[in-house]
Image 1: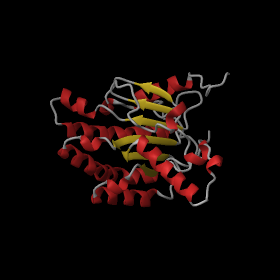
Image 2: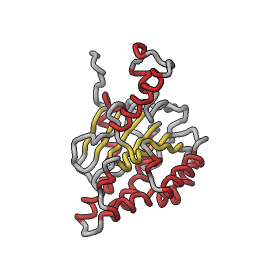
Image 3: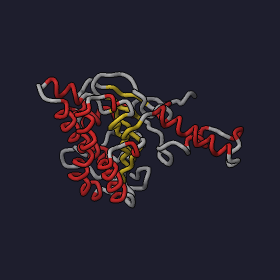
Image 4: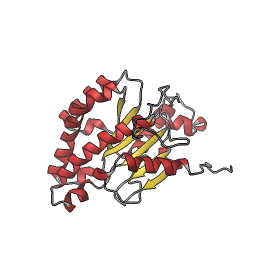
Length: 255
């Protein structure tokens, strides 16, 4: 079966681990990766240990989505509000992308994964920006699964920036304000060219979007679990996908 970008799903492994749930799968899965700190606290470890453990889950979830044939995955890595956290924790989080991509970039390239970043990366430390640049360069020609890392991202900030872009076009006479519609507006969002998320997953028991893809997720199916992010695995993802395939998506109409 071909996915959105024309790649065939991988064949199932002997133990069925790579076998996707039956039914129509989401084209785009978005995940709010929550619970790293609580995972560490329950084990008497510093919060950064939870973030390091969560990094391993990122690797496994990317592998699982690719194996299942999910064309697009967006991971909420660092929000515009996360700067409020203790300085040492923020500093560690800004170093984590370098560690992750140093160890995982070869496999991502082998799998044909194209990595993108959404959010204002210009506000990141220089070393983090360099990691972003190298990763984009290394994966830009890949034509397989797309993985978006939401880094210094906020849904409201994204919408405000899109409004500014529209206002500039109107002022320049490029766009007629009366001709503006949802499609023309969405061109100015950071996810332009990608399908809106069909499924939003949040771990750790919290039940809110926390300023994540608030325009794009308007009609997304939501799935919440009490499992903390470092404990989230392929089976949990399969459970979420299975439930998704059983839901009736009407988009305001009737079926």
